[in-house]
Image (cartoon, rainbow, N blue to C red):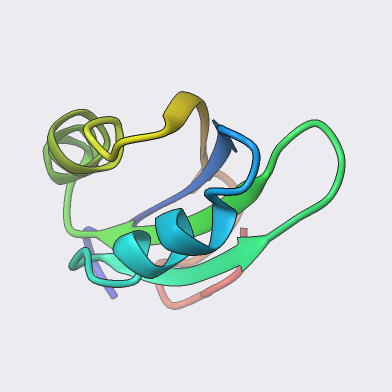
Length: 89
């Protein structure tokens, strides 16, 4: 797909709110996958959107406004060395 931007959002949240946050994330357009994880982060979300501007909008206006999210870390996948049709990072 031409113009597709993919990013992973690693989320820290308040203890005990992981499932609620996962359910809320699943309702946001552009979020393709959400998982609870163990380690330095509590939740991992994969986003696919047409542009960096759309990505910024989802993160700042939707994800970061969810109650009980403490912080997010975003990793944007590089397009270097791969075709636009390749769905992997």
